[in-house]
Image (cartoon, rainbow, N blue to C red; front, side, top):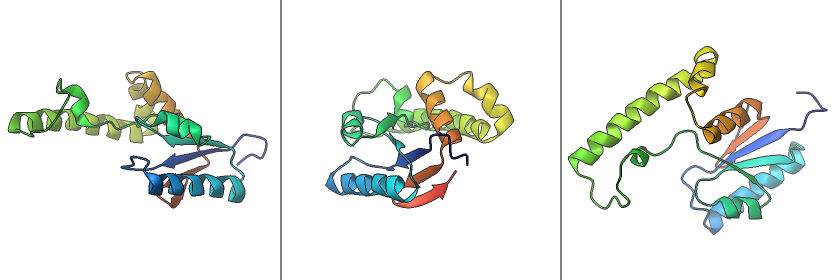
Length: 141
C-alpha cells in the first residue's frame, strides 16, 4: 500500500435494517477503521437506508448481487407460489453466471460492460479497497 494514496474502507452489514444494534456495530467499525487503520474514506453498502449511511458520515455504495425478486412485477411477495419460485430461480441462475464471470480478472472486464453504473462503481470500490469489514470481521483486500 502506498502512503500517499487515500485509503478506502468498506463496511458490509449483511442482512441489515440498520436497527440500533446494527447502527452501533457500523459506528464501532467506522471508528476502528479510522483509528487503527487510518482510513478516512469509508463506504457502506446501503440499499434503502442511504440517508442513514450519510448521516453516519459514510458514503453509500450499491450491492452487486441483488435479490431475484427485482425481475418480477410483484410489489408484494406475500405468497410464494411455484411459478414465482421458478422465476426467481431463473434470475438467480443468471446472477450466478454473472458472478462467476466477475470473479475472473479477464472476464470481469468484459462483463462490466453489460452492468449498470452503480454496480460498476461498487466493483471498482472492491478492487481499490484497503480493508473490508463484514459484520465485525476484517478481511484485507
